[in-house]
Image 1 (cartoon, rainbow, N blue to C red):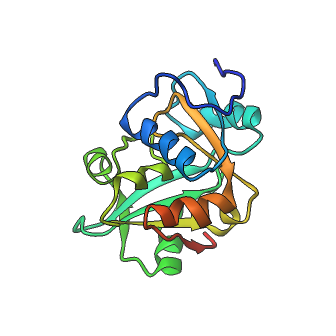
Image 2 (image 1 turned 135 degrees about the horizontal axis):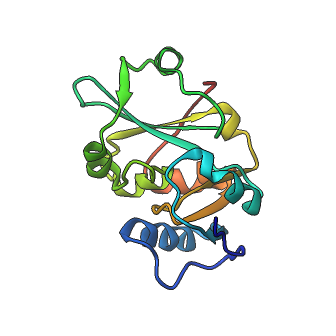
Length: 178
């Protein structure tokens, strides 16, 4: 798998509107980041090498919704952690949830399956999606994810993600042990 050297600069040709918006927002908020470009990845199993290069585990991001598709959740977990619906619902008070469709993911966050990222909240100005972060992720020094395209990955300090980035986009993370 191709993985570039680490850089702290945005690419000259970002992969799409969300990715461009991510770099612009990080720059505006003075949040330093490190980035690598990589071959397209579709599954978490493919992200191990990328995380090693960045020195931070790529986080698993799942988009969920209730049966009526009126409540949406963006859940962030450690890469190797199994998602348990029952635990998620018990710890968050959410009704029964299932994985959101690709169409719903695109409509709510501007992301597609295989490219889900917490950065998608930049496309959720109405705060229709509740961010839920596993406690283990929230307590880690680094947070690594894709910036809106599965052909690049970035890392930022978790503290800056939680205390600067999310408040800037009017989102507050629910932090629970999952």
